[in-house]
Image 1: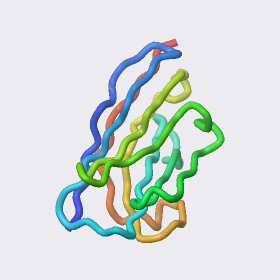
Image 2: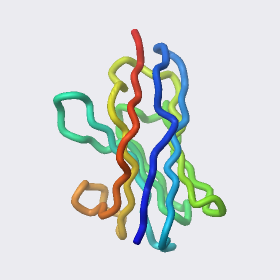
Image 3: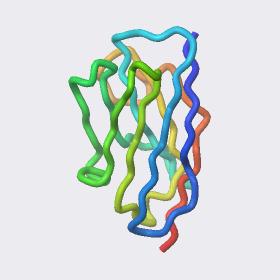
Length: 122
């Protein structure tokens, strides 16, 4: 069993920064892909970023490219989303997720955190 718990959300002004963390507990696998998704109120959940547990691949949605950075620390069983130059449109509940393959659709991620709220004030 793998459990994921997000933390680090909060309220920040436009242009500010936050770092989200996703702590992984229980059974872990070296083939897991770790990702961040977000759900804006009233909208479908969308992909944000992903990284392999080995760190050899990363990718970002166009909307966060050059502003967000995904990383991981395997020794701490934790991965992160550093969010810089935040915009009001980044306001959403952010979810971390894990899956077995590099296919970045929601259906391929079998482990999910509970979500953490990020609010960016204009």
